[in-house]
Amino acid sequence: MTTILGGSRTPSASSAVASRRVADQLKTAILEGEFLPGSRIMQEELATRFGASRLPVREALRILQSDGLVTLRSNQGAWVTRLSMDECIEIYRIRERVEPMLIEDSMQRLTQEDLDLILRLADELDHTRDIGEYFRFDREFHLESYRAAQMGYLHSMVERMWNATQYYRSAYTRLVDHQGSRWILDAEHRLLADAIARNNVEDAKQLIETHIRRTRVTLADHPEIFDIEGQDGTTVRSSSM
Image (cartoon, one colour):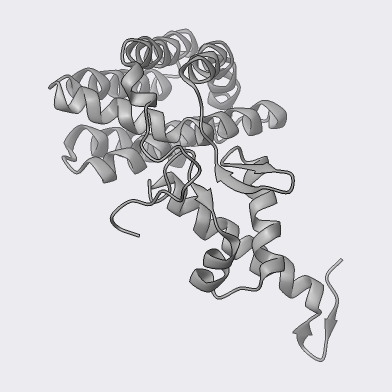
């Protein structure tokens, strides 16, 4: 329980707040591609960047490990989680089976406000040309469709798998965008949003399974996506860092 003395937080409570702040900011940086899979995460650099001491940074890394974004190695340090092609394909096979269950559970409880947001996000996906915005809208669209599910363990597992595969999903989207095939994704998003709005559970389950399988098959056909530069243990950053 948080103790307040003289209107201020105790040091332990303050450290927990700092850890959560660092975890949230680092999570955003990883999901937006600032740190590539396999990048070494230097705690000193994070402490300087986020204006925090080493203790909150270490706790933030533990939080992100539980989120599937960071891999901690005993006495070695922290890295952004990297997947082999086989590992990524395995996760996608699991997602094909479990996300239809999650969307079915969620659809029973979605409000009209939820439905309006899902339809609006599908429209944004259909019209945005900026690939960075597309990634954000895509993630929000799918996670919003699962938001009302009460299967807490499954919900956490699915979000963790989304986190671990974020880089590979974005690489897939860039690939199909370059090939001129993004219209297929847009059509699938519109059909899924329509099925959710009509409360047609079977259509929604089939569509999400097909949507995930299409990504899996394409990733399996492009092993070069998993050949990420800088996997020799050195720190890897994008040009925006």
